[in-house]
Image (cartoon, rainbow, N blue to C red; front, side, top):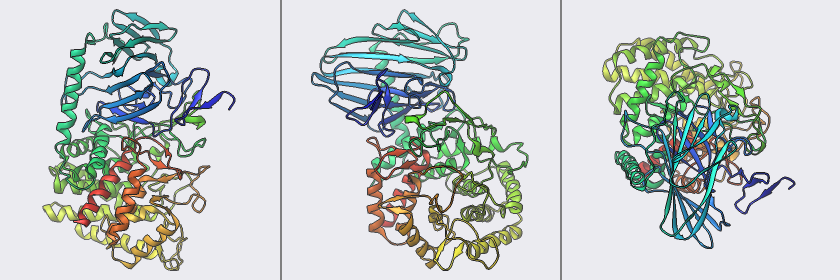
Length: 627
């Protein structure tokens, strides 16, 4: 393979430096509700941005094995087997490496002492334990600041090393000796059975004269470990879910919580950027932002499990985003925002990075921020409706904001848009967008009636009914007996028969009864054309070009929508089998990327909130149907 070789674990390795690309699924996620890190089964932190999810990366070898930066800990000798698991009911990751001479365990976590801790310090703790036998361990700490664009200085300190760039200061303390090697630091040390080594990395602003890091000792590390265990278990104990798939549902809930930015209440779509939907292809996006659609669905999933505090925090974040917003080219609501609520997220390319296994370009920012996607209004209003019903209820000011947004939507719902899948092939009249506009108006009517809130109900009901009839008349292909992706262009002309898995949600949002013959025949058509085993494609790019080259994998949220559609149409046994099959496509920790390839490989950004919230919805709904 010339300059590259394959390991037995399927890892592509660059022979020059021994750093390679694990499969996307061979990673676990840790975090502190401000940012997150991906840790591979090889003991390598391959992705870490600080101090926030959307900050430039410090370790980025996930997207450029040679130049991205990483932090490796592993035995020097050959590893026979690698394993990972989460410490029960927490987001503390345990990586185990089995050799002929013993077992080494790496415990990775970012300490969280309590909810809303005003004294929170961002630290990444790695504790290495020799569980059985004796092992020689090697560590290499190779940060590459600002996506590898900023130089840094490195110096030794009494208990470790310090890396300093213009924008960031990283202090690494250890109870083993580290030496400086060029831009990096590293060392080798021996651990007898039962012994451990400890590393604590802390990120600071360079304006601080000295980093506020505790002297490394085992008692302090144990206290951090125990307090973090206590935090995650106390949080998870709020769950009201007691159904059949508790382990998978709770892992998904813990993952959604990890994607929450606690200081603001924002919920990011994924902690990564640039992971490809097709290896070697151009479908590589930055998902470290707040998509209104994804966050609204996440709020819905968390409410179903009883996590009302997160819902309240997100509503507060959203309210702050809407304050003072003017109706621009794309209306009062944007598709996505930064964690701080900034709607300007220009997309640019990191052309000095090779991309995951050569999948370039690597994009930062997201051009979808400038698109019109009308469906986001329905998804948002539906979640606000659920929060108003099951959470703390919305305020007068929030209601007036919603009324103002609805006024805009009533004037623009019949516009072409980019749709839920954010295509770059020009605006179209998407059926799903109309469906969610109907949801937006219908939910506002419900809230007004339930609480006696002011609103122009006559106008609202009139427009709601216009949308309904348009979908039924122009979004239905009578010849093929299915709802389709786009509305017909001319009255009386049947729409083009382009299937779209997003239409599986019709009964979930109460637009149609699941027993309606039109929906049942749509389910059959999607099953025959977009479903392979339990995996579901969102649409066929060859039939419906989306403005991008290449193909993609099956879309995991659609696969869970398929489970729910089967259940709602009375196919309970088929739904249960499909759900169990989907569980087999999770990685070893119960995590999912955005997409699954036909050979089971994870594709796209990882882990993705969209997928985990759909898992929660499918599992809880199927539980209800099974009784």
